[in-house]
Length: 507
Ligand SMILES: Nc1nc2c(ncn2[C@@H]2O[C@H](COP(=O)(O)OP(=O)(O)O)[C@@H](O)[C@H]2O)c(=O)[nH]1
Ligand SMILES: [Mg+2]
Image (cartoon, rainbow, N blue to C red; front, side):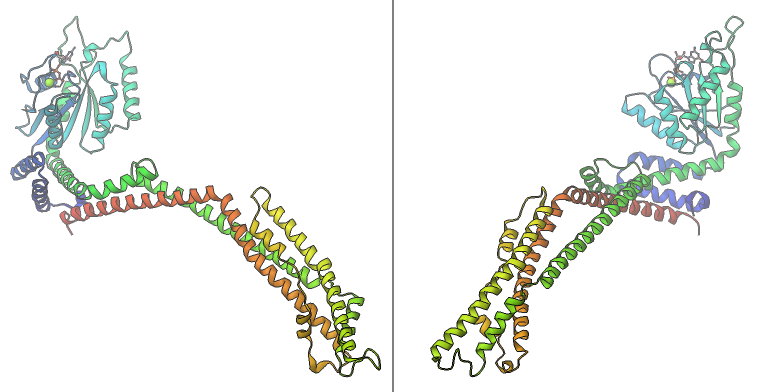
């Protein structure tokens, strides 16, 4: 529940006391004296309303108060209102106090402080503008900021005697002003047109809302209690706010520095930070999904290509009839009792065995090169060229392709023979199949080696092409973290304020 809605008088006095203590802790003299004054106000039997008259220098604030209160404030071309002066509005039993302030455009620090403290104490505000300077940006901005504070506010166009109907009609002037106030989002209860010059027959003024302004001021008196309460709450809240800001200042500054480094600016509000975060986060998700998709597409493509090469090896026909026949003749020579001829010497027979083995060996070697390793190496080189395009070549891969060759030797072949099966007529067929399988397994092993390297190479090429994306992702992550950090501190500070205010609210 909000403080405003639920605070009782006793809660408020606790709040004021807390604020007083807090302000003292912070060394904020200004707030201390304000809270003390507010404490005094609470003790008063009857509530008063305090109305601050603010505006640019020489708008006619003092002259206006003189008229309203039959006072004798100094007026003139030299800034004369060095401090806040109080005047009781006649006919209010002292319950409406008007505060005259220096101009808001004063460059003197003392004046500025005087105006701020009058505004802080004020339950209502009369914004006085000179007829000739109604559209001054300074006053419009000031009025806008003021009107969001929630004090009852009226806009006074003073020195209306300067108006010349021939120049612009009063209606047009009024409409223009209404539009301007609307454009600047200035919430005000009324607009009054006044002058402190009492026109005679020759200098008749077009309008003078002085009586209406007086009435509006007098009508504030019945609202005194609720207005005072609002003022108390506003001031307590300001002190608490200062306290919380002070508490979180270092943490906030740190996160703001990070924001400046990553985002380049500090968001205007938590809402803006949240919008920025959402935007960045959405972009991050898109990029990350893109990367995952690309990565799995790459893995799929690589796996498909690898499977194609494996299949090529499997399907390669490297043993035509003649070669198989040579294999059979070799196996035949290994059988028990094999002789080249009836009276052949053992040495001659052994030479024949070696001859048959080498014949098979050389033939198989040649065919494996012609029908398996050479076409395979060519295909792999073509694949590398196609993938590399402009991404550069890989020495490592070329070396691995060159290494795809078959080295058959007699000993290997002899090892492949299963002695126990030699008796069977069908064995030579099986033997050739075994040898071919051995050859192909060798080649597959080399393809595996090649493929490991190819995968790394492919990944490297990919990383190069997506480098800008990765950079963007990294930057996004830093921005997101910075925003998150800032929002967390802002949220903590808001929560702390809410808790402090909550302690002042009724259950
Ligand atoms: N023409 C005209 N001049 C005014 C009016 N009220 C004040 N002035 C003059 O405007 C100047 C500034 O007035 P002052 O009340 O001191 O302005 P402040 O600085 O806002 O307090 C003085 O010279 C006043 O005489 C008015 O209604 N009409
Ligand atoms: Mg003045």
